Image 1: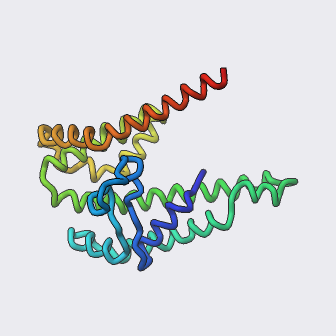
Image 2: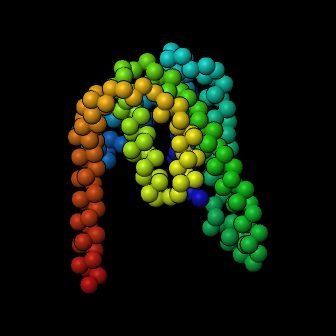
Image 3: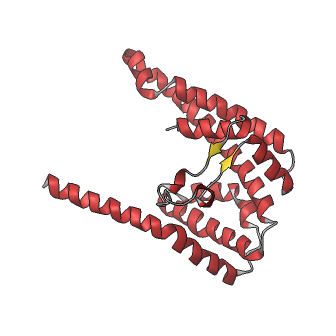
Length: 216
């Protein structure tokens, strides 16, 4: 199990700290480096801005939720920064099997943390989406079923799909009646974002082809 130092640090800072955290990291992958900062995918956020936004759309106990998530993410960040599997193996190379139980406990705990974060995130997101037009809600329901649950079923197993479905069930209960509106957003999303992803995939394919040619 890998715990990203950057992800845990940024999440903790955004939830608790006073510094801004950039969510525009996707811009370089979408070839938006030349796009003005205000128009890029993402934003600059901090704890106060998050609290204000979620309170404004009606999420209850926002500060309590943010503080709890910040606290546990801080612990995860410290674990990630202070320990890694390789260094612990080196330190205990003659009896490294003893680490298995510790990493199993860590993995189980992080899974529970991911579950808690997902439920809080979905709760906040659904509260916000209920303020949005029906076509946007219909698109989100479609996205959850087509782009989250279907791939999970193909890649993993039905029990895993059911577990994820239980996490996003509130999202799946949004208004899904405006399918024509969802079609419009789906097309716009595909053209705006996924065309760029196709470019990334083509670049990746070309580099693999070049590597194959070099190896042979």
